Length: 129
Image 1 (cartoon, one colour):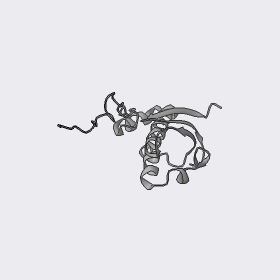
Image 2 (image 1 turned 90 degrees about the horizontal axis):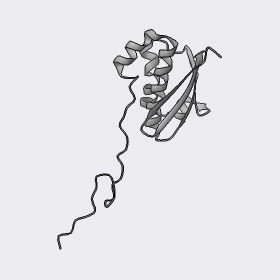
Image 3 (image 1 turned 180 degrees about the vertical axis):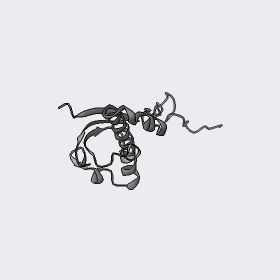
Image 4 (image 1 turned 90 degrees about the vertical axis):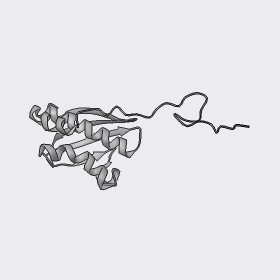
């Protein structure tokens, strides 16, 4: 199993664990076809971008297990995991991926709700009288 490359990516509340191996470019997300899971072209492009940058489109089969968050967060998590796995495959892929910012974990997350108010920033309605 030395040809398997395993990586993890996170974004917001989403976590993606991937197993990448040399193949024909088949991507499976949570046991469903990739284009069925990520329905919009934008999300599909987000996931496939690391392959485009490294010019290795359709050379790896990817199996993804993702949970948490929404589809956009999951797509970002998968992108990070794929970029990390590609650097394991070939260290020469690191500079172009790093230049695009695909190896950086996006630290932005939902702000916590504060006590005495209905949300993170929103206040209860103020009544003067």
